[in-house]
Length: 346
Ligand code: NAD
Ligand code: ZN
Ligand code: ZN
Image 1 (spheres, rainbow, N blue to C red):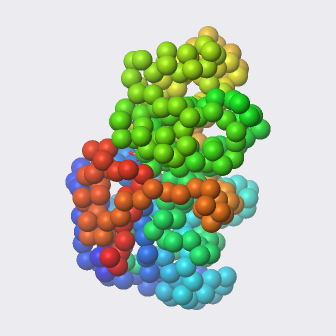
Image 2: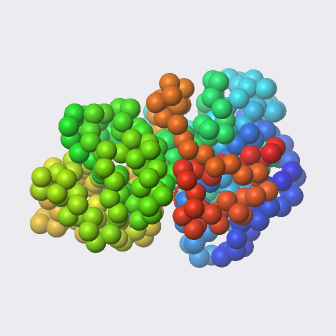
Image 3: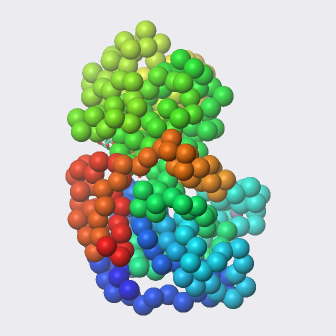
């Protein structure tokens, strides 16, 4: 089968032929219908050999949807032919957080060498994908896999944080979304669907600011040296109740800290090497800083419901699986509007 692999440290993703995996006891084999391209893959491909905690080659892709093709011995709960989405944050499955479906915060996964697909285990950018346990599969329930696949990360990750902050996101509060890319453009829609907040979107790119308006931002500003004043002015000098930073660079993180109001929540979601000095007097009084990771299985079910209701629509640019290197290049250049999605059988 065809698979998109990261094969050598510092190399580019390659399309290769590999054997179709065979599901062992408890495992499920999916015939893939869609795989999303996330900016985090550049973080993985930017690591040194010493920093990589798993051997190469790695089949990429941590946003996946497929059809159950074959089940291993003892598998219950899924049926062959069923269309599913993959919950990608794989934990030990047995500890307290995992029992709650919060496998994204399993404290044992890293210690035991349990990796998420595409982030250590073989991922979704292939014609077939091996799933370690049926609990990682949620029914697509009529959703189009190509349009829904990125709800598993680009939807789930912002949802996880927005849901946690909902009690403070009162009608009329202003929030900032920094970075209107794959995650950011879904975050704006989630905020519109779940709150009556005023949304300010900031991006370095004019096209992304345009997308911000299209998906529901009330105001957009260029993310540069003028941004802090622009946001402060828009909020009567107060700053914003919550900031969601989907870039995470030194510049965006500094902006996030500078536009926060007293008693605000700052969510550093992007993995761009930025850090925010935290300490008394460094940030407005009462500020909380979050560094969230992905989301829970229950939250994925909720995000899929939002997809079904039409409240959230991922903007998708499609590529054939074999065009993955081109999709990665486009994402790297900032050229993808919304999310790039690979289609194995295109
Ligand atoms: P993307 O490339 O689709 O979007 C990033 C956006 O940020 C782009 O629109 C870009 O123009 C914009 N941007 C860059 N620098 C900026 C700045 N200084 N100010 C404002 N905007 C700026 O990426 P994505 O796939 O949406 O991922 C976003 C980030 O989130 C990545 O760093 C990714 O690694 C990270 N991520 C984190 C988690 C998590 O669980 N914490 C999960 C998924 C992705
Ligand atoms: Zn991701
Ligand atoms: Zn666990």
